[in-house]
Image (cartoon, rainbow, N blue to C red):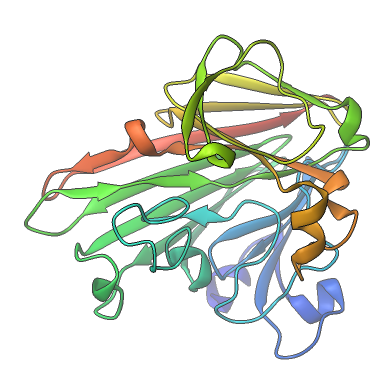
Length: 298
């Protein structure tokens, strides 16, 4: 990784101790600074943790109580939940949200096509130990393009000799200045699976608001959703037809050591992926790609 980074103009090595004053041992990270933005990416999970355009507000939320430890999920940014999203429906005892977010990815390429754009490519290959949890060898590639917006391209490849079912999400956390007045648009008129009521289908009438815990899965959604509030954020997805909207509410947040009392008022999750009825089934040697774009108002 150091060999790739040292030949760039906009990328530098950093870590969780240097960047966030957290305890040792440090997790390796990358700091990107170009003419459009500043961003931080953890090598663990290829997880974008922070992103701030030069002319706008921070578009990602990172918990002030996030834990930076090897093999532990980092609360905030954009975790990659894969090869299943949420609780594994066939084996609930398996780790929630899969296992790739807790493992190091390989930085395979950096491109700097112009002073305003930085492109990084991370790859993940499942190993023999992973086969005990997911019996299909696969690779994942995450192409992260950072300019005045975030663009993520996720590519999955099934290397097994049988069909492989993938359920996944780019679990993006977004900041809100006032949770009570924030809203999510672009999902009205759809049914959602309500995780607070055993995934019971429920009709969405109007914008989504946050007066308590919200945990909803929307299938086959339109391309674009918006967060109304401060900052205003637009989320667009191609070939990731599921949207997940989540806020833990006061009681759950207080019980989470990496969130804490009152901290739920700082963020909402508006995620895109392919889960439940939109999950991907890849035949042997098949690849499939999806794109997520996150843009703020300037």
